[in-house]
Image (cartoon, rainbow, N blue to C red):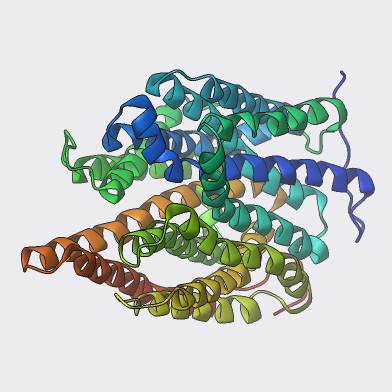
Length: 480
């Protein structure tokens, strides 16, 4: 089939053809991100069925995160060089192939391989979606469309554990992949038949030194943070070593990108941080992802290990908040188009802070309604933040930088999510162990650790509120 390139619509209303492209990318992105979060609940079943330890099973998540951290920084260059259609087919082809490998896996090795292949496709999808939306949708309508992207970002991770729990209650764990595979293949076939190109590919040179620097730097950092977050007692190397290696390598990588950027040779053009609106929005997004992923880890631990809820019930308890984020995203996008970013992100940051502090008050005798209320407040806050931050960040950049800006935001989400898990779990573990050493019962020690983890997040949330006062809407839209 011959590639077709279209010119982005500059009218106030996005054309039907462009809406079809965006809808296909949205459905595909929802599918791949949903898949990202289904393994956590399945780990106990996998340990029993495959006869593996928890440390070995955690590699199903760690390998996925590592692949994402390695591939996402390269997508800025890839999206400039390849057509929209080519990148989509590559992303969904890898995702579908990886899903098939997982579904037919007889053991841990093939299952990890399948997750790595899946992650390669997942890493390309969100930067592709955001770059395409920024290219097709006029500035005055971007908030509404970015609200739909926020549904993908917020709802998919929230319902992933719930869907996984339901499947595991009824079927073999391989059905988590068999049920996703037809969706991935359908999207791949539809994209092959109907997707048109919406970009004008360039031929930026590939800096061969930057690729291994990026892979080592971001891979080592995410691995180190994941190791801390997963509390690997049997780690063969000190937990701080990969973090240090990652930070040093990223510093070398960043310096090289800043030097190559003006020459048009950067793998990931970091001149995006020269824009204050972009920088503030990305930093705030990092805080949001720390809160989201830290909460996703700690709250189920509290519900299951402290107040004794079953895993499926704990997963269902997180569902209302996730659905609320999804339902609020479109109207918040429309409000962004009307009133700008700051009037949304400041109340959003306050809600996130309030939600974290409510979670820091959870105790041995707290009821499920306390959990639901705290999670709902946090979810409303995140809903108020995601769409304005995404739209302001990318909208502040010139069009040639959209692909690099999308890749920077994707990388920040992965690193911040891993950092949030590491921080929340590390604080919880330190406090819990200290309480246990003093003779406190395990349940009481766990509750104290969870409170300390959320309290740490609450303190950090004050920085999120302060940063909200510096967010601005891009200059090509009406002033805030």
